Amino acid sequence: MAYTGGPLNELNGKMGISAPFRSVPVMKLIRTYNPLSKDALVQLIEYHYKNDCPCGIKSQGTVEMFGRNLYESQLLYWKEYRYSLKECIQWEYDLFVVQSLKGGVIEKKAIHRLNQSLTDFKFEEAEGFLDEELRIDIIIKKNTVEVGGIQVKPVTFKLMRPEVISFNTMANQKWTKPVFYLFYDKEENFINMDNIVLEIRNL
Image (tube, rainbow, N blue to C red):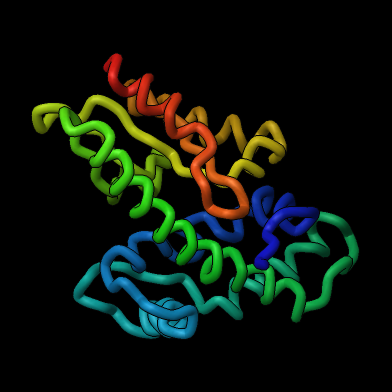
């Protein structure tokens, strides 16, 4: 199972290695091309680094390059190399490829469940500014009007550093509409779906 926590997560976040404008807006890439394998996503990231695609998505490097950036940033942040280049590349691969593909599948599963449970509302994948800047995964609409949003997160998100959680919260607040957090466990079961459904009914 891919593991993207630990000290490298702190390093990656503090140094902004995987920020979309410094790396690749990977969820946008997944939504646009719907890659069916990890290799396909790796190739898409590389293609959008080496080529100017009409789709407008641009990567600032390959997965291997993001790993190298993570590796080199250790010296600046810790004044030493604690992890090998291979470990850093693997960490970024797990983040950009393994976790991103998994996240996309889980978001679709959430949308399907919500649309079944709340027929008075419509749930859609967030795109562009809402997704990349405001950290919103799913838009909630009522009578075609956007009334809120949802972030879909692994329950381990609750254990992350306070500054990571507050970064997400502050990004959400820029929208001025309510944003709910839907959590899933390691078996990919939603653990607070019933509560979210009740809260959305009150919008």
